[in-house]
View 1 (cartoon, rainbow over the protein chains, first blue to last red):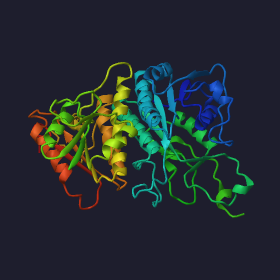
View 2: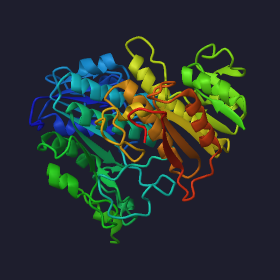
View 3: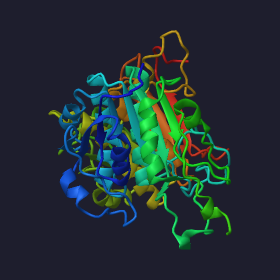
View 4: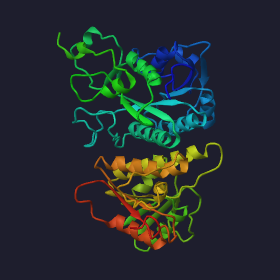
Length: 267
Length: 211
């Protein structure tokens, strides 16, 4: 049984906004090893590079642990996975050629390999679902899309490298008995809707930072999955009906709380 | 045609560089100081992962044969696997996107039949079978190169013709003459009539994958 109800969880890339919300959601349930390429002390005392409304990670003390880990270095990743029950990889590098390949793709390889070597029960891998890629196979004109559709990243650096990272974890899942849940995200926003945002419309693949963090808790607690590699859209139901959200509800018992009706309803 | 051949410091790239030069103008590139075959005439030491080094080479030709994913050299040291994975996927990305920017119609990508070796031997494996890479860098690397090529070609902006070879110059794999002939055919073939940008072909001379 790969369910991880308690115990120790390592988070890679914890310094970003999604990592911040993962820490928030998991800190009371698990003993966390919080890792990033930069010291967490430095990250938690600085504003988010993603803007003033993006969450910044809280700096936790014992029994949790903060550690500097370069995900591109296998020895560091392996050491960080030792003694863990589960692994969450929310690391990402979007626009720099060298680091995008080494973090999004090779980093995924390192995490999956180390998880197998350490006998970790469950890996939650994360990546983007790009709703628009500028080519005919990007699903931009489609509706009722399911979580398991193959991604078509085109030639976008961020999308391609994350796509490769996803395939690497799939191979480890299918070949090595590692249970991998891949969570796909697109747009994030704060739970709170400002007055000037009301009635201005809504991204059809949207999630609040708060719900995104909580989805990871459900990912750890979820029962054994039907297959070794399962992909989930992590977004709130929207009336546009472009993206189905029922798989996470069925398999993980999770659904978004924030529905953002004020964004798409005229008041 | 004016052809770039990558991986010219390895056996397949060296072979293709010399043999294709009998009919075409070839620029052979590799990461080593010297080509695998001393008969290669125009050899350049290029880091294919660096666009600033690739762009000036790409504009000298009108088609590329990306042989590097077939027999990439794995290095030494604690990060050898990681470097291999990155070099093969990133070079494929950099080369194909540079070729697209330079107006190429097509890139020929060479991958490995070994992606199918874990199917039972009695199965008649063809191009419509899912590759089964192992959870090892040397097996994943050519598969990831294929995925990069396939996905970029899906944009409709450039064609990628992917050839999978068995062990080079082995009667149970892909003989040298057959490898060269398959690449020549891939370079010269008309575009696929239904507009697909990605084609696959298993090019073997004998053995379990022969049909």
